[in-house]
Length: 163
Image (cartoon, rainbow, N blue to C red; front, side, top):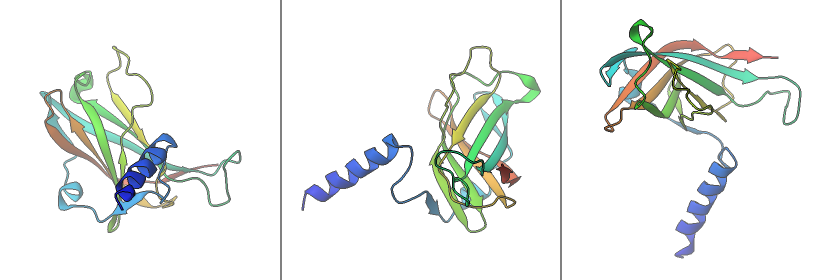
């Protein structure tokens, strides 16, 4: 019976290594703090805002289906006045809220951040099959170099469709 926790841990590692979950995306009721996250948050001495671009890919190709691919969300964190986002700021979790459901996913920086890049960009892949045409709120949790966390929200974002 002691094997079960190890199997669950192994399944989680396989899911992460393969870029997804064998059970599909994690969809939960959103917490009140996620629903009420601000559109501007102060972290590392900067006022930060969030741009989000949720979309579903319907382009033909390997792995495609008539139902399209799962939701992908790209976000860009920006500092007020065009200043560069502090280099110690990182994003670790993203919530995409649709009605009374929220998809929770790791926020992943896929490209190295250039020393001269003013914005912090992250993405979440493998989401639910919501939309296109639906509106969602996108929330990201940011942490500074000391570990202090804030939530930042981009409300009412249209899920786009690429063909």
